[in-house]
Length: 436
Image 1: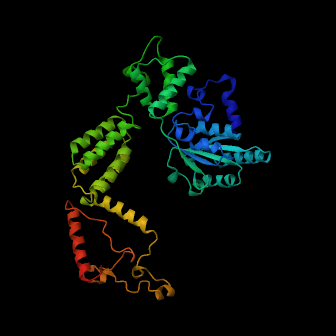
Image 2: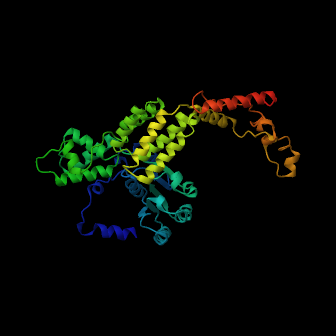
Image 3: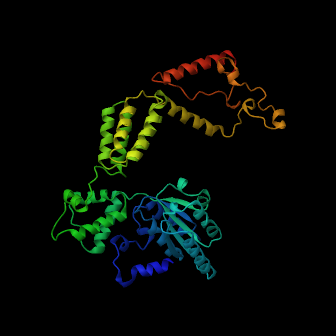
């Protein structure tokens, strides 16, 4: 099927985009993915083995997922077939599987590259499993979505997930230099404009080459574009910072620490800088939800509610109207009483849980649905707290060999002041009733 498509698409000398013409012919020539394609990269090691297993390529657009899949097919002498989950259905898959079976019977292996694989539903994803298991196809799926959430567990158990990174500035500049060598002419850009072009691509190599091609197409002879002219030509605003690099992390760190430090003005300033630079508002919404739990916690039990409501308001209104709800949340969180007691308690409890392994809870608090469990003492001395004085039994709930632990230590700020009083009162009752 894809053979027909390729033949139809390339006949009569049809023009090919620069990004397609510059696809590397060797795995080592792929830029920006050295952890996969470098001398000691994961895929380079795979090619040194006897066989190629099925894989999921996870990463942003324009990072080389399709190119690498094609190169793997060439290196392993597998017949390459490519489909997109956006345009394909069950009937298309059946045709490909039948073709793959026929080829395999004739001794030809098959590499099936599935673009946007996360768009296939559960049934469609399951249809790959028998083909992968019996070796009819080696499947490489490409996705921009987190495979843990977007793909079936059964499919993930049969395929190795490899992460593709956004191309950094150095990699983008290397691509542009390769384009100039291929086209035998320099990009008519000042040094500053060249760097801004790399930033405009936002880690997408294909976007960088597409913009370079557009510059060559429209620039006048002898013209050299500066930053302002570049923005006008490409109809793109030069980013204030690179969302994939240090500027991005510096500003989100400054926003987070300003909220933690109860400075609403500084927090709002950094929030607006990121919005103005083109940051994804949903990224900021997610970070605000995290701040509500990490730095405020139970000191203000409404903080998490406000953060989630702000995200919902943005979903409802969209941009730019919804950004005001996020700004409101920034100010609320910055002015809220602070406590990291929940955050610290979670980290300590998780550490203890991992170390404790599979310690059994005390039998007194376990149900006894069978006669044998009753004979073993399950639930024998359990006290129903609502029947006890103060609705508090004070009995032990920790595994007996672990002993009682205190992870959560509320502070004397906000609502946690009230929670501390409750916990102190229960600790007093527990001691009086000799239930430590």
